Image (cartoon, rainbow, N blue to C red; front, side):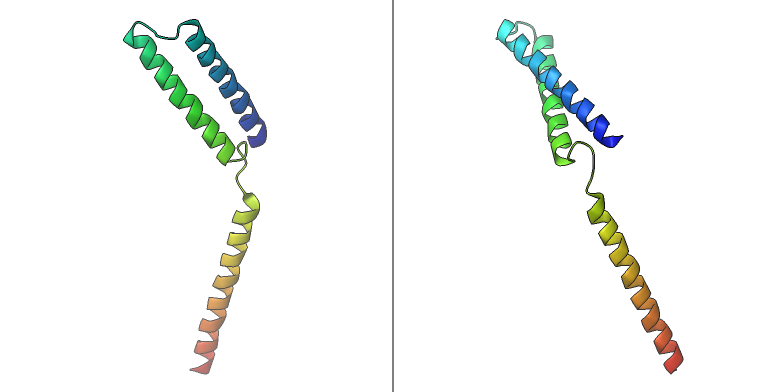
Length: 91
């Protein structure tokens, strides 16, 4: 599901980018400040969305890495508990 959402977001973002390029070609120097603000804000939004999608690999985080870290944490907790139990048995 995350992968599909990432792909849909990517396609939508590319569509907005094409729309912005078309508007800049159609009217290269907008006359009013509202148009300039809209173009700048949409450009920032499109770029940040593209960067996020690319960094998260279309919405799927590296779950193998997080699973590995979680299992290492469990192993470390068990080792600590074993050491504490050995100390209690020795005393």
